[in-house]
Amino acid sequence: MPASLTTTFTNRILQGAAASLIVLALAGCSTTKDRMTTGSVPKLTKPVEEMDATELRSATDRLGQAYEKNPRDPVTGVNYANLLRMNGRDTQALAVMQQVAISNPADRNVLAAYGKAQAAAGQFQQALDTIGRAQTPDRPDWKLISAEGAILDQMGRASDARQRYRDALDIQPNEPSILSNLGMSYVLTGDLRTAETYLRSAASQPTADSRVRQNLALVVGLQGHFPEAEQIARRELSPQQADANVAYLRGMLSQQNSWQKLAAKDKTPGTAEASNTN
Image: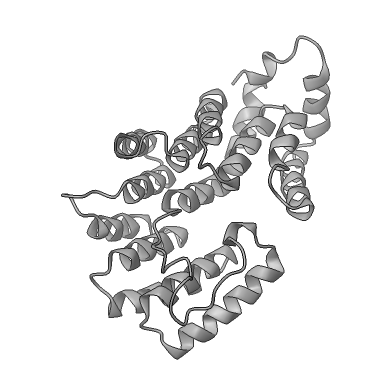
């Protein structure tokens, strides 16, 4: 892939990739309570990442009603803020977590979710400070360390971010969400081949989820290997979700009128190596 195209595409996906980093960095920070399985908190019928837009709105409405009844409850507040972010309502999610954090200033899960909300709203230094308060030096949480890396990546501090990911991997070796974050860190600096190496490793782990595979599909697609990217994007998703992911990949690249050009190049014998050149 020509260097000029790589730079253009990398710049265009910077914001989306950074958002993926935050999602993956804090995935798993929740307890079983945070996953809506206890108490009076409304339960979900499927994982949030597998919901379509209608299902997300419905779940958000139900959690919003529960939050109104008890805005101090940490489980309800964290879950509601998570769903608000999934709906793109970052400002409201931050406001919810501010209120919940006031009522639960020492709750580790609340502080972690508050930091996530701050990062999603662009308050990166505040997010680092909040997540730092949630961390316990005697028993460090790898999920919070990885979250710090994601925030540092969004601040343009790639070297510091990657060190945090490696610190997290020291605690939790081969964790797919950390490996995926590390791979996406290289996407942000335009090193797609290194990114693909980490993302393939992440996707090969038994506990890898669909979000990791979608990041791999993105990186494979950015290098011009569209049939493989589509194949990865369609795994373990409903046809509607898979079509939406593929449409996103196509739409992102077609902004530069490059989908057809790169797809044709990918089918031309002897061009596979060229498509990987940064």
